[in-house]
Image (cartoon, rainbow, N blue to C red):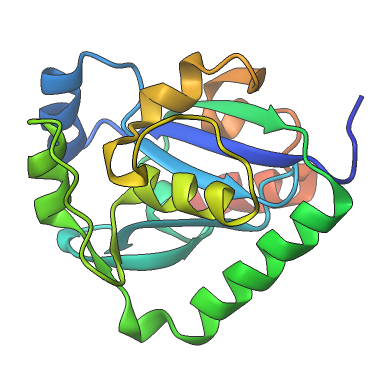
Length: 192
């Protein structure tokens, strides 16, 4: 049963060269984390590619399942995780995300943080995040402490294995049953 105060963590594996490189090191099934405000994944936020064909142009992104990066990688695998939060925590999360949206040009991708993460070194310059660091920071900002470590040391796999996060779906992204049927149909017509 879905509580309107739930938030969702979307973990994905697009299969790109960059993600295969990360996966080769981590040996984890998913290498990208996003936070979603709804079960249907219409409001998803993270730090990642701003353009599908350029992994180096990255920062705060409002992800779109059908018109964003995922559109270019239709064989993306995913897991959707549910986290129960209070109404107040959910409202605070929405406020925090609005601040990022309004000021998105001041944020950058923490590429060096990924490198330091491999050595378990906390590298967190101001206004710079990688995907799982951002999601962990958003949760910490609403007083959801899932780990006893800095956000810059949290990986996508940490979300997958955390007992407070419930797996509600795992499989191909475009097979996720909560996606809008109309949007799926429109997407398939564009792709074919």
